[in-house]
Image (tube, rainbow, N blue to C red; front, side):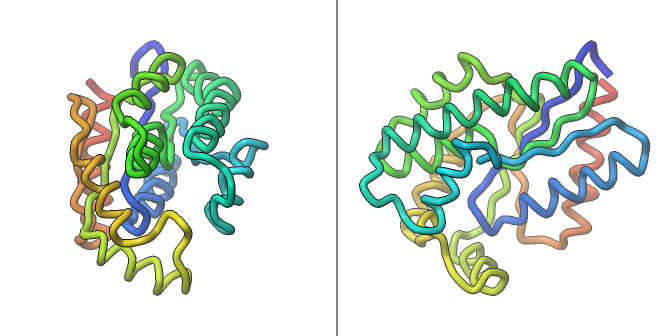
Length: 201
């Protein structure tokens, strides 16, 4: 491994299976003795809890700009308290959602995705690998409904289609797109092979 750990993020619209794969990767890396930390955003901190409240009860009179500022503040705390210390300890950091999600979801509300990416990259480390999970939004909504019985305010079909479009627009040598309609085991195997190549290079 390098002089610091590796930051690997799992991105995509809800229902793509990214959270499942993030957890599976943590189990796998622990099993083979590679130091690993797994986090999620929004966090369980003060700002993250405000965001999660929006997800369950709706935005109310919270503006897009105010909501974006909460994501930024939550991420600043995550970088300072969790991500940077774990990378400094030479761990593999697995992150369920990161600033690509903020750019895609807030971008679908009408804000500028590129500007959101730039603002985040001023303080947040660029991931060594960003897995963007892709699946038809209709399929994702069906998965969400079967597992949770309801949709959050972020989970309306036309909105998710727009979010997916923005995810599709992101470019970078660190980005790998993962078709997530296949078997969980097959996707996990594909990810394990890629992670090994990444951390052994």
